[in-house]
Amino acid sequence: MKIIKDKVSKLSFVALLVTLTAAMFYTPTASAHGEKSQAAFMRMRTIHWYDLDWSKDEVAINETMTISGKFHVFAGWPETVDKPETSFLNIGIPGPVFIRQGSWIGGQLVPRSVSLELGDTYEFKVLLKARRPGDWHVHTMMNVEGGGPIIGPGKWVTITGSMGEFVNPIVTLTGETINLEDYALDNIYFWHALWYSIGLAWLVFWVRRPLFIPRNIAVMDGKANTLISGTDRKVGVAFALGTVVIVAASMGSTNDKYPVTTPLQAGLMRGIKSMDIPAPTVTVKVEDATYRVPGRAMQMTLTITNNGDAAVQLGEFNTASVRFLDAEVYEDESGYPDDILAEEGLTVSDNSPLAPGETRTVEVTASDAAWEVYRLADLIYDPDSRFAGLLFFFDEEGNRQMVTVDAPLIPSFI
Ligand SMILES: [Cu+2]
Image 1 (cartoon, rainbow, N blue to C red):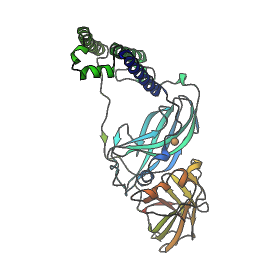
Image 2 (image 1 turned 90 degrees about the horizontal axis):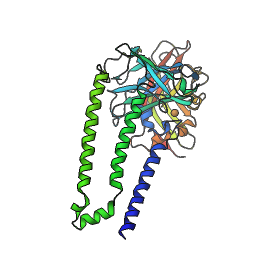
Image 3 (image 1 turned 45 degrees about the horizontal axis):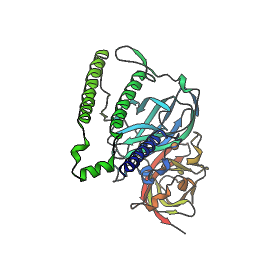
Image 4 (image 1 turned 30 degrees about the vertical axis):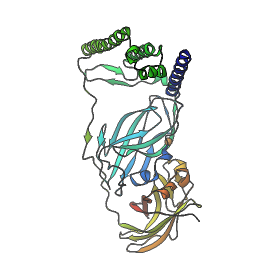
């Protein structure tokens, strides 16, 4: 009976180990990053990305491309998300398929976290170097402490060539040129293998005897003392001492080999320069807003007042990186990703130029499958179902003004 129990518990242990190992090694290639699963209110009410430009659609290994544009930090930032006091400008890609060679906000290099001000708009640029061939969805992204990664729009970029050719040379502060791609790789393999085998030896030593159930029975019977022998104790001490000796000795030799080291740099940069955008001369009041579930359309009643000196027309509504355009007023020529560009998605009940000094109440409809495909419509199931976005007005000469809107959204199921 005891032998059978031993066998069963050993078998189940091995099965568990195999499952865990398999789970660790099974890593299928991810091509997108769950951008659609991020809560709609996060994408609509935090960071608004616009005027984006992916400099290339196809790039060879070792070549560079840039992503540049602007982002507006929404003044109606949700209460449930920490303010962007510690934020890091990032790129959302499936693993290190590119390396980031530099990123800039307002012209300043930002290798660290930055503090962003609500209501401000910033210009940014990220320089990427291609590392792994394939088709990748490349997103802008802002990591906000307490808020998580806030994803921007993604565009497919193809990397060609072979990963074996990728190099990442840098000159260290001591004047040595190294290739970061394979620097000290042998050492890394060695240490992983060493600690892995020590761990495995430790496991095997304990696993080759009766496991959980027989040991539990022994403890229940008051025979716990018989479970650990003198040899077990000696082996335990040998493992402990061995570990300490290996760590101490290798630390000594590492310090000899690399006398100058500096810690990884971290910290917060404040006072990042935001854009000087004159206050818009157009004001917009959202009278009401509804989302029609069957029509995949959002309807807003807006009262627009033009306090400027040129007539304006509404050309674009941008929310969560989905752009709804009125094709008669504005056409996008930037090569913005198709799936989040509704070229004729914006309908305005009266979009004739609004003269200076004039006020007009209009019905604005933003309709596109993107509401469902990008799961923005999920917003209506939020306890605080508000929508937010950017409205762009254009005058005759193509001058643009940006107005933010932020209002409750009422769903309609008929
Ligand atoms: Cu993606």
